[in-house]
Length: 266
Image (cartoon, rainbow, N blue to C red; front, top):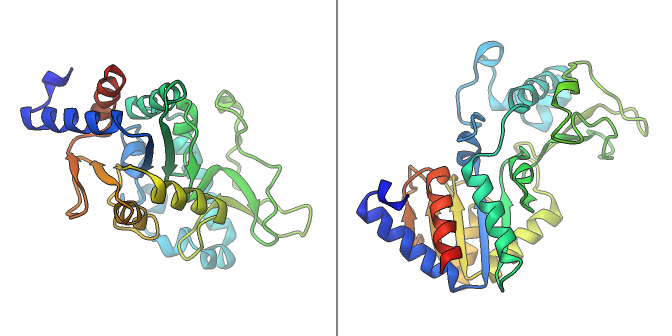
């Protein structure tokens, strides 16, 4: 398997595996790149079809929802339909395998994601979501979690409704919205606390499929570095980042299964 990679990349994988196998506290941050390998478009991808004339400010801000809740709700129903049949890729499965393996060792592998899909959960991982959950709803007014969930399990894909009719909250009458962190909104307090604590206390911080340029999540790698952690980046298009110690310039679905295989063999 490793032989498929360049000699330089093989050396970096082995170096990373040796480092990771020797450490107890690992913090992993995943971004849009890992989901893109499962066929989920990234937010930076150009909108297509009905949505190509709309920008982020029209579809993913609190102001947009106040101005035109039907438009925003319809777009998220379309996104859910787009994502509903997507499955975890080898990168998601490798991370789940690593967490499972860590239960029988002294390692603590904390997984944080900027993604709103549930591919990590489908693969079997325990994960903290910084930007919310595509498959959950809440009231846009009183913030009460909604009982009208578009999907309650991974097996009910054929019975999901993608109706674009607006839903109202039984508590206050406000419109139901996706439980997503929109542009201009604060990250969920508990999720951010978990992420900050994991980053501050880890010995190795791994950034996967994210540019590490968008704050506040980008600050997690810097926080880890300030506290003495080594930084590993897995990204086919590495970011020019001086704090990274090991760069694995390849798709996560290629690198992670090989990396986990090396770690568990040591």
